[in-house]
Image 1 (cartoon, rainbow, N blue to C red):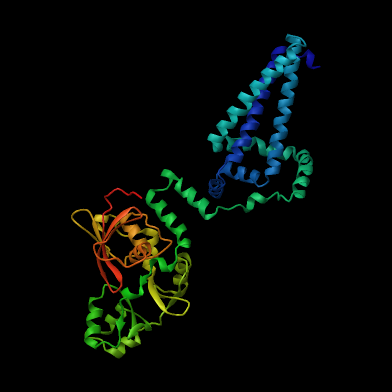
Image 2: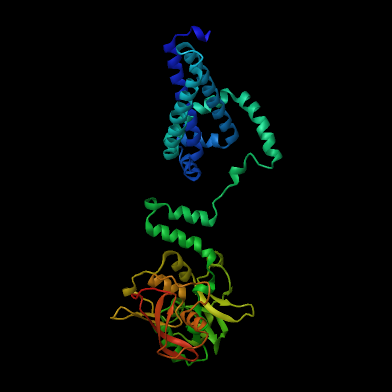
Length: 424
């Protein structure tokens, strides 16, 4: 009979039951709070605690079943013992007092404190707990299965899968949040590169292409001396070859192949035509992550962007896409190497009107919108709805801009002073 057990033994039993209740409460919170992706990584590395936790979390219904069974059992037994202690020490009046005190003790020491600790340090709580929970689950499996049968049936009626968690994956936005919140775990430079990779699917070839009017190529209709001079002075290793204009493109040449033809002499026109490689065309609107894979599959490094009518709109290289990931070799505006951006002694910049907005943002660390016109000229003319005269000043996205030169119905040069306050 419980009434024959010494008070000191009942108090000791009550203390042990409260500790067990704290164990079950903390174990539940710790296991549920584990970072699933870190857990998978640790499991693959063979961490014993992570392996045990992964096995338990494969069937969360069984895990929750054994924890709740243990927690409710010890709480009910603790309540019964507390009632006996109260009756023996105080009498029937002590039952209410014992109930209130036990509720406070369990709430503070067996619920809030262990669950908070487990939420803050889930691995330190969950991994050791698996040493007890896993054998306990195996021992009580028949009872756990019986207890879970009815809830499982109800969940199936509600259309909830027992293995729904296994199919959960991070979306791009969620993964971007994870990278941003990684803090010191990932170096800042690596974070920027990872975010740039995630952004590739939101950027198309039109955003980074060299516009048609800026494409440098070899016109076979030029005289041979002009072509040889262009080959010897070109800053590019690959050039498109065409007749008359870029619409009559024949393909691309690699200057290394051309120079190899004339190791000891100047190459001839016929030899040049033999090393022309067939042109590679890219549909406009192609996302950068898709085009990166296409370049890899086609073993290409350069292509021409065409619209739905087959007209050439620009040129894209593999290097352009890689720059979207790793950035320019320098991001210091004072040392900007872009041929379109020229720092001035007064701190302002002279910028070519045809400069790509994304390139301008990357080099200058600005935040001009990229979901509209692709060039600075297009952004200004869209904003003003006319081609401005030289000397015109405006405030574009908070940046003071002065039109310096216009020609051929377009803006050629502007002056931007980023030092001034950005006000709408």
